[in-house]
Length: 562
Ligand code: ATP
Ligand code: MG
Image (cartoon, rainbow, N blue to C red; front, side, top):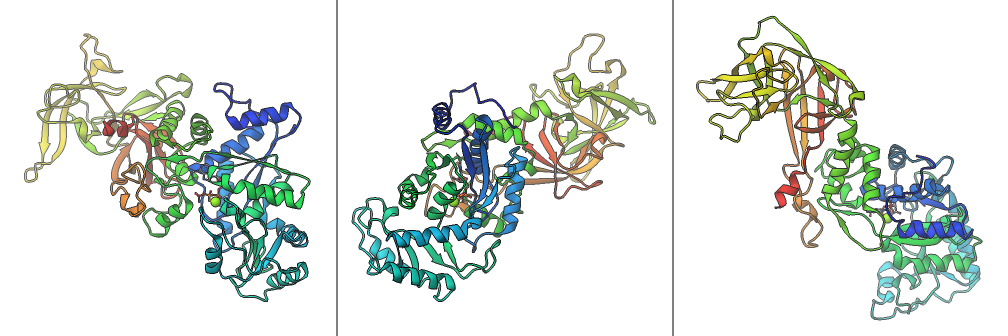
């Protein structure tokens, strides 16, 4: 990934234009960006957009991108999340080299900066309760009221802040606030809290601290400490930019990064906030953060998405300044396009129906050559066993089928992929239930390879597996996790009301060709006519294969909407 050329197919997005300009003028010859997740959950596809932007710019402009954990809220953060986030970023194909940082590494410096703000009479310790503070804050239309503690002396503030740090006060009894402007039209500027007391053990600093800095205060200073040039964040931080700039200006930091906001990714048929994804996990609506239906990076990986497909998707949607929605179909298409070129073709029968080829010799086993990719001969071929009994897809037979049904019915002929033409002669049914147990067919030995010497044509080609050699497996078919485009649309209805009850269908008795018997977890293939499948990395074992369907061959939702 390193040193890849700037994307030349599309015009540069507005952020890359700024970076280009800054490089040209020499303002920032080496752009430095950062990806700053809070380790309070797993990364999702929205984070991928931010990762591709920050690391992408570093790669394209010969700069650097820091991996920084914004770990200032110990009540929600865990080192397990730190680990998963690092894995996900690496898996996406990006590298931070030695530039791994934690906001918690700066706690000491941030504390010193806070003392400096107090000394400059730009911060004060406030004893108002959180309810009182809210009441004093005012509204969008009314100015706020100044705290009665706002004019404490520097000495008193230094003493109280020290006492906060020493653990002398209870949680919630005191906070440190920036002294800005209670009448500002921007609520973020109305003396925001910059430190609170939290008697909570931190995943990295243990019980060293009982005061923790707030996000807005921490973020700009961490950026300045790391000499970030372009601090890229999503639009909801636009209102926070004045505070970002105020902190750095007031402290006169030698470096003042430029915050630039871009539109976050909104994707249909999913929720994107970690808090909501967490609810799905904790309430058991999914099997975990990496459930293949989750739009987390780990869920997509387990589902069979490649890193390239996710990067392609991010490139395709681009970076803009206006909120917009991307259809889930765009993401699905990205993985379909990628797997179409990379996934070897195999035959797998989801719902098997036995076929006995009555004129085929009882003990004969043929080896039939099958190409691994129809357009790419470099992907080679494999040998498929073929004998008297095979399995086909149950849906490839229909009794009294209409004329346009180009598969099997009594008296109809189809081509078995790579093998022979067969004609259905009779059907064996269970006498009581009427269930179809097997088909009896004959084959034409002259049609090996799929063509008849007499030139007769068949319209249908169906997939199959050899009964004696096929490998039994479980197949999991996924549908979108939510039934509606925007599960969050109605604030009065819980988003979980919109969960799709049919998002997972498990078929236990599917069959795949024997070439897959020893395939490794994570292997991605196309089951001809059925879609792209990936061997599950959690539940699949040799002798007990589990396949996840990554995506069908065509977009079935596009049809449904019409
Ligand atoms: P969530 O709202 O899903 O909980 P977050 O913004 O709280 O996410 P962070 O860990 O703070 O999660 O995010 C790390 C970075 O990823 C931030 O710079 C944030 O702006 C970016 N990011 C988060 N969600 C999206 C999204 N949907 N599209 C683009 N960037 C995103
Ligand atoms: Mg956040």
